[in-house]
Image (cartoon, rainbow, N blue to C red; front, side):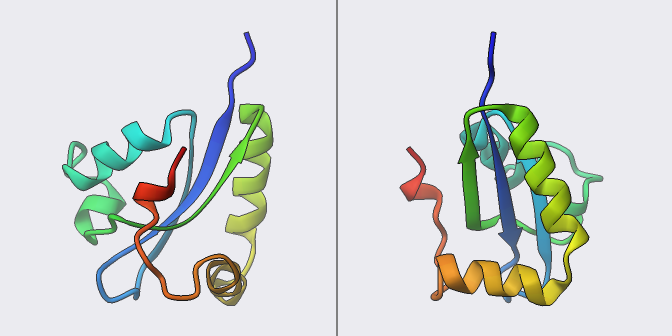
Length: 97
């Protein structure tokens, strides 16, 4: 069975921290992050809960490859990616299909 996936970038309230991740269920992952289900995680420690960028893929392997590509890039490349997709840095949770 083929399984799709998402890559996503989260930030904190002041936009000083960026977190890039991959998941097969974006809404569930956001729920986990926002409710601090993993209290020792990076996202919990730095209160990184605001979704500012995401991409969907048909195959999870494509999402994993894209996550590695984004993580390998500089912070500036991540900022450019976010600004091109979401220039106001709004929380995109309600736009997920």
